[in-house]
Image 1 (cartoon, rainbow, N blue to C red):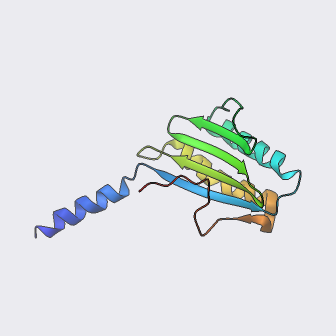
Image 2 (cartoon, rainbow, N blue to C red; image 1 turned 180 degrees about the horizontal axis):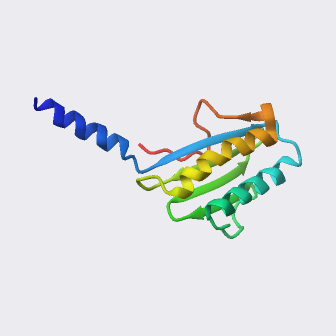
Length: 129
């Protein structure tokens, strides 16, 4: 009987993960794709209330929208455009939940078969050990 409370506590702690990230990829990017990704991310950021962060830094950063505990960003890589949505709060902020619902549909509609959800971790992806 003592095992049950321990298992319950372990399950509860696992459910309360503070960091979560989604990664998406646009393969074989065309010259106009960077602007399309920027537009899509700007539109979603506006809908969920994430401000556009000041531009600067590496030219590979296409978009960077950060609010309180939610980050929406895109990087131009050599063979792809990588898009990330992350949160660092529990429960998941409303901005994250809404962007998580909108983002894959918008990218899929815009890029069709070139839109992928990577099976392996991407280079720019944040990891939590």
